[in-house]
Length: 157
Image (cartoon, rainbow, N blue to C red; front, side):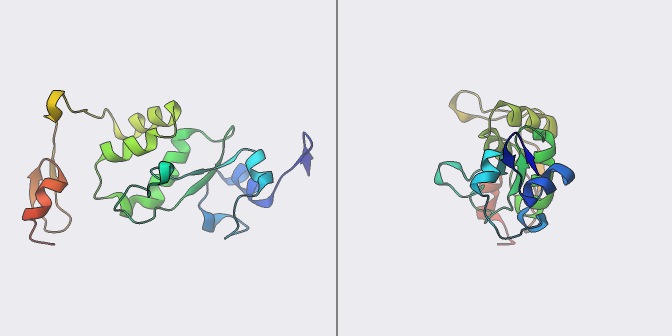
């Protein structure tokens, strides 16, 4: 099937029919995006992987999500990525995830605000007064502040 002179791949058609998908959900699993796919708007969503960094350092590799640029909304892409990576992201603050997602531009930044709500930013000198109580997934203790500051005292390490 050709549209506007461009041949569409099986993976591209699956994305159009079923929405954003992980590599294992694509009909031709294990294949890379072809030149044809890239020309037809097939993109990869993997926050944190830009600029040579790993996806949200410390999480290990997160599962990527493929999408079609002009067809899928950022909210839909972000929801899919978050749902397939929830277990890898549970130790990260919404703020850290938001900053990585924001690398994909204004539309993704706005979708992140919709999903996670307003993200507080540090004031002058880095003092962030908007910490919430958190429960450590390693030791069960409830603490206020950053996980990194709790970690040295954590009994579950």
